[in-house]
Amino acid sequence: MHHSDDALSALRSMNPSSKEDWESFSTALYTELIKKQSSKPGYEKHFVPHFLKLVCSNIRDVEVRKASTMLKTYAEEKTKAEKEAKKTGGQKKVAKPKTVGTASAKNVIDTKAYGDEALDDDLDFM
Image (cartoon, rainbow, N blue to C red; front, side):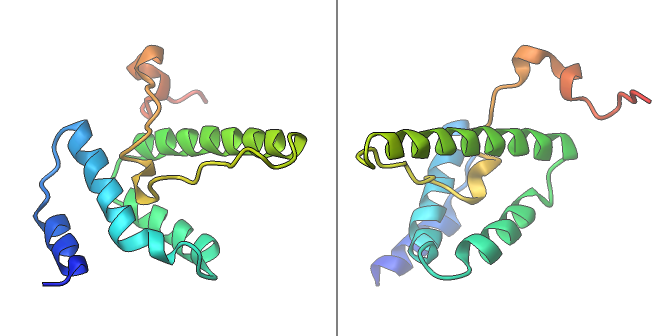
């Protein structure tokens, strides 16, 4: 059996339930299937937006908003790191995201500090 066949078989047999399980699953998915495509033309423009949409298609809108907030924060961190790298002559390498589709499963910002009502859709402010 080929290594990639073993990896695909392992991915298929994963049954994530805990946070750590989901992080392992998302990392394996990215490492085995997505990472090697990430340098190809169209990856950022076509694949990532479509994949994120697919990943978020079966979750509640409030969870999509949480993922969106996490992505915005991550983008701001990357921008800051890139500016710092330019100031220091490009010595500091900006870390690439470990996962793509896992924006919603990994690195989710803890919004519990704001209380459940902070991001509750049922509240109508109009």
